[in-house]
Length: 147
Image 1: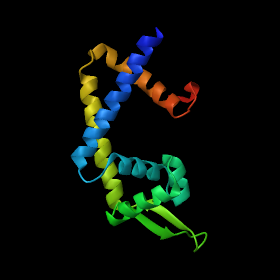
Image 2: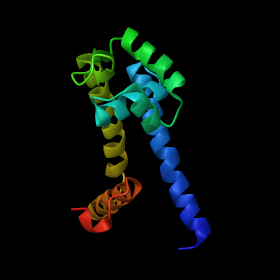
Image 3: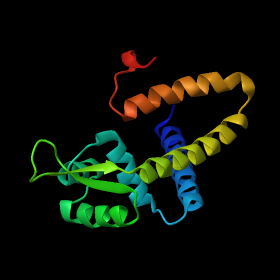
């Protein structure tokens, strides 16, 4: 595959996924893409600290603190005293935060399933296998580990 064809394919995939994510966020209303990114990272890390969440989403702790303040006010995140130290605060998704992420995931999955249905039936399995391998590579999982 030529470098140009590879670039075009990867950018088309990236643009398509951003479009799906944006539409799914719009369907939820009142939750921004940035907030959904923080909620998604928090789901992976929880319970976690503000500093760990900031590192996970790649922004400063002060920016993350303001973001978390908004998420707590919206009822999507809970702050709790850490059982290890009363001086530390841990962050967790609230039940509403979990439900919001579940709705977001369902909306994105529906969009991806719709796109998959537009592919020839005989190609769908191969595309899914390739996407599973590519997704694992994006997450740093060796190809040998992908089922």
